[in-house]
Structure formats: structure tokens, C-alpha cells
Amino acid sequence: MSDATSQTAALAAAPEVPLVAPRIRRRTPVGSYVLLGLIALFTVLPLLLIWFTAFKPNIDTVTKPYAPPDSFYLHNFVEAWKTGRFGTYFENSVRITIPVVIVSVVFSMLAGYALASIRFRGSRLFLIVFTIGLMIPTQALLIPLFITMRDLRLLDTFWSVIIAEIGFALPFGVFIMRAFFRSLPTELTDAARMDGCSELRLLWHIALPLSLPAVLALALFQFIFSWNDFLFPLIFLSSENARTLPLGLIYFTGKYTTNWALTGAGVIMISAPVILLYIALQRHFVRGIVAGGLRG
Image 1 (cartoon, rainbow, N blue to C red):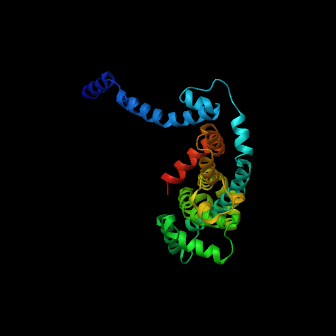
Image 2 (cartoon, helix red, strand yellow; image 1 turned 180 degrees about the vertical axis):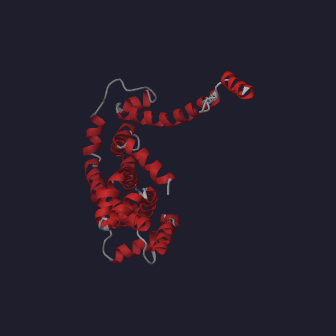
Image 3 (cartoon, helix red, strand yellow; image 1 turned 120 degrees about the horizontal axis):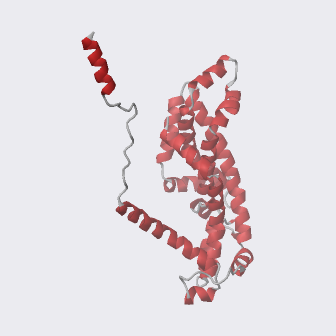
């Protein structure tokens, strides 16, 4: 009994060991902050220079090129919108981008769900085909695409650009959505199937609400791809009335080479919708990329 009593007393006197190990805070070296600050500075400075140029009279872009504008000179935007026909180019870009985003996101969602959740013959072959589509460079298919659009009499129409952009957007979209759907808990889908839920209802009522961040992130990706696309409009669109914003900016710069203020206003017209959309969907964008890119 004395031995048991002594052991008990020794255990009571021993220092308590924490069940959870304390977190070790590692200090980030100062050099890392300096390096990241320099990278951010070199990234932000050209953007600030463009914004400063757009809101200044053209004479100030020569005399004070790096100084901020004295006042917001909005005449550059008015002249670029009317004289430079950026209003027409903006409308053309919207008419092309909206169908591309809607169709590519819907088809990517349907194909990604089918490849991730439904077992059918040939599913692996379809996945390989979509994966190969990510590896083929756009430039390698320009001549076959041009001949196809010419034979279909779609040259110099928005449909030629829309069809081409959807075709190149689908492999990436299917890859992202398949990875996200594979990360969803199988207990939910299995329980829904046992209750007699069809695959379409399962997708609409269960998978789609859970995959909303990935869908919004994919929509933002496809919007940026279509809105900033220069190659397909350059190849397929020849008339001035059919030009998109990136294509119109090139011809506008060639016409107003010395007027950097108007060129800066045109650049802001192109970049502003992308920046505003990213700010609005930033939270969903990060969640969708983390869930769809790092899981599955």
C-alpha cells in the first residue's frame, strides 16, 4: 500500500503535460516582405500609370507623364466612346461574351457532373478527350477552324467567334467542375438516389447549390477569357462594325498613336468590367479555386 501511495503522490506532484502542443509561431523573414513588396510595386505601377494617363489631357501626358491628374478629365472617355467607336466595340464584346459564358458553364457543369458521379461506358475515353483538349495550342487549329467557318459561311459573324471560344473553353471547364463534383460527399448523393431522386434533380437540388463557388469561379474565368480574346476576333471578323474591344483598341491605337490619353481611356473601358466583376465575386472565386483545384 505504501508503494501505491508513493506512486500516486509522485504522479500528483508531476507537472501537467498539455494535451495539445503549443503552436510555434515562425517569423517571416524581412527579406520576403521586401521581395513581395517590390513585385507588387512593379505590378501596380503600370496600372496606376494607365489610370493617371486616362484622366489627364493629352498635353499633360507629355509634360507630366508620371504625375497624378490634377482633376478627373472625362472628355477622353467621351471622345473614345464616340469617335473611337468604343460604344460599338463594347456592345459587340457583350454580345459575344455572354453566350460564351452561359453555354460553356452549363455544358461544363453537366459534363463534369456526369464524368464525376455517373458510371457509363466510355466515360474514361470522354475524360481523355477533354484532357487532350487542354494540351492542344490554339494556334495549331486556326487554319482548320478558318476553313470550317468559311465553308459554313460564318466568317465575319459573331457565331464564328462564339463557337470557337466555347470549344476551347469546355476542356478547362469540364476539368474544373469534375474535380469539384468529385470532392462532394458521396453520402448525400447516395441517399438521394436511394430516395428515388433522378440524376437531373440530384444535380439541380443538391450538387449545384454546393458547387456554386466553383460555378462562379468558372464563370469568371470564362468571362475573362472571352472578354480579352484577341486572336479569334482577329481571324474571323473583318468588318469594322463587328470588332470587339481588344481588336478595336489595336486599330484605335494605330489611328491615335500620339494621343496616349485616349488610348488609356480605351484600356480602362476594356479592363473595368473584369475588375468590377472580380471584386464582386472575389470571395466565391477563391473558394471555388481552392475547392475545385486542390480536391478530387
